[in-house]
Length: 417
Ligand code: ZN
Ligand code: ZN
Image: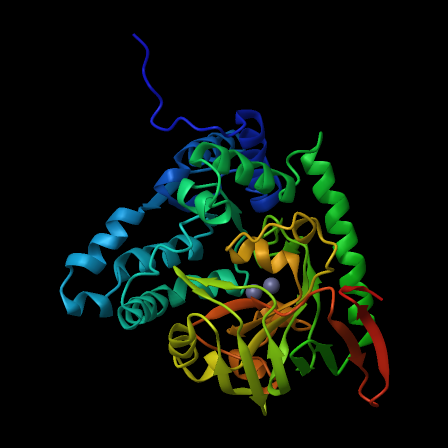
């Protein structure tokens, strides 16, 4: 008698194993004795098992995984009493914050069905998200402030694969999405760890150039876009590997192609159009058009998901202001794949983007030593949300504006100038 594996998939097992190794050795750089907290969709169990194996081989103290599942999430929307939607599992998030305070690393496996909540009441979705964001804040701050090493990596769940390749049979769609994830995560190469070292060096070269230029603002022009993004005082550009406050140099996002910094929360002017749909917690928001005045979004439209977009913008005062601006060449491998992933981790790395909400304190010179008040005084935004959306394409030009008003070409037709 043979024991059936729980999940049989069309995913290349060797590459999946390499993805697990990259998560532990490049993404997290897990240290001997360090604990690890994983959150994962239940469908990604094969990857969780491999990551757990490699984490213990790297000397992990204890690995704890918390699973989510689409059907149980939907059961809440179908059957839970109305008051449920203002609740969150506070105790769980408090526990996570405690684990990070005690030095645990954090790994999230992305890959939920991007349309999971599309058919649900947007008001309930927004309330549940808000309750969750509030409960999660102490833990999220430890991640956003880079107190610990952390990583997000993806697994090709069937529901996600079907969204990306709707015309293919499920098994073929999963295999195709798996290959796209492997290529974007550089695990299809002979030595993925060495490939990541090269890639990190290239991103470092870009961020070093931008830091030397000390631009006061970036000016984006393209179809439906004429946007000036003032940069925060003492902003610093980052990209690729990053050193957390615990001294570990990790790659928080796999894949990653961006260099990014902090805009000035009060100095964004003009209008901008999205260049790809935004998949936000189960809803698709498409053709976003917003207008900024004094850093604040004063007008927001979308051809799809406009109600959800406006609910997001009403989360708090900081939700209408920018917390990140990021540059990605149009020729990035993810963009070149031509696939729309309906997943920010991938789509944001196909295109220049901006993020509504919370800024990263590490995107300031000496960011680790700044208080929240100092960050605010320098133009850093704060919010419960951080939502990236894409504004770059091969039709968008970007100029850097120096403090004296002179302009330096940064990108032309989506490529580094
Ligand atoms: Zn980004
Ligand atoms: Zn972001």
